[in-house]
Length: 449
Ligand code: F0G
Image (tube, rainbow, N blue to C red; front, side, top):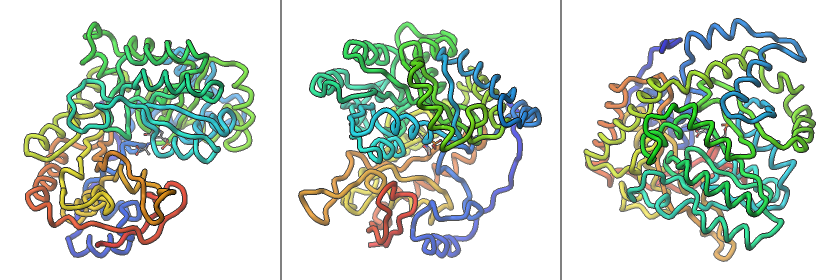
C-alpha cells in the first residue's frame, strides 16, 4: 500500500529531553512532536493516507449543501455497516456528544469499557457510565481470545435492575481502555439478544471495527477464512447503530460519524449537528475529508493490509513478552499495553506507575506513549478526602500508527523498554501538581516524587 509524506525523524539528546519534559510538567501531551523520536502516543489520526486517499482529496466538492463527497461517504457507510442513516461528525467524540446529549441525560450507559471521552460525554450529560467487561478483561495475563467481551450476566442484571433507566447499551470494538482486546461475534450476538429482550438499543463504538473483525476471523470457531467484510456485516446487523472515529480504522486524519436505524432519532441528532458542527452534508469537515474517509473505510478491509497490521503489533508485543516485559496478553489490535504495576512493583498505585513509566520511556529513548490508568481514570473517593478511587489496571499504551513505522522502529522501542526493565527502580513515582476537572490527563502537570 502506498505511503505519502515520508518524514525525517530526529532524536534530541537526553539532557534536552529532560529539559523539555520538565517544561511540559512531565506530561507527554505537552511535548512538541519535533522533540519525539518514535511517537506511539496514539493510533488516532496518525495513519499515513494512501495514494488513492490523497487523490480523493483533489476531488473535494466544497458546496455548502449537497456536495457529492457526502453521498459517496454515506453510501460507503451503508454498504459496509448496513446502517441506513448516516450523520458524520469531525471526530468520534462529537458523535458521542450528539448521542448522549440528545438521548441519555441522567441515565445509565453500560459498555464493555468506556473510553475516556465516552465516559466523559456520558457523565457531563448527567449519566452514569458502567463498565461490564468479562473478568478476564481486567486481568493482564488471563489467556482468553476475546478479552473485550461483555459480561452477559452482569449486563442482564444491570438491565433487570434498572428498568427504563438504560437508554442505550454500548460495545466498544476493540476494547481500547482494556488492552485493545477484541469482542467475539458470538458475544455481540449475546449482547444484542439481551438488549432486544429488554427493548434497549445496542450501539457499537466501531473505531477499530476492521481489526476486531480480523480477530474474529483468526480466533473464533467457524469464522476462519471468511471475508472480513462479511464478518463486519454480521456484527453490525446485530446492532441498532454505531459511533465511529474515522481517525482509526477510517485510515484518515480526521472524521467520524453516527449511523443508525431509528428514524425518529435522526432528526434530533441532525438538529443538534447543525448547531455544533454544520449542515449535515458537510458538518465539521471539508468535502475532501469525507472523500478520504470513504476511501479509507474500504481500504481498511483489505486482508493483506490487516494481516500485516495486526501481525506487526503482535510481533512487537510478543518480542517484549519474550524479553520478560509484562504486557497485556494476548496482544491487542492497535497497541501493546505494558502492565506498569507489574513492571515497577516498587511504586504504589497512588504514585501512578503507568504515568511514571511513560516519563521514563521518553527520558530514556525519546519515545512517546500514553498512560491509561490512574491519571486517566482515577477520581476522588467521596468517603476519604485526599484519596482517589483508582482503576483496576495501570497500563502504558504503545499505540502503533497505521502504515507509518517499520518493524525496525518498533524493535528500537522494545530495546529501550527492555533496558528500563532491567533496572525498574529507576522509574520514579509522581504526584499530580495541577489538574482540570474533566479529562485531566491531557493537561495535568506532575512532580516527581
Ligand atoms: N472511542 C474510542 C474507543 C476511542 O479510542 C476514541 C479515541 C474515541 C472514542 C474518541 O474518538 O478521538 O475521534 O474523538 N481514541 C484516541 C486514542 C484518541 O488515542 O485512543 P475521537
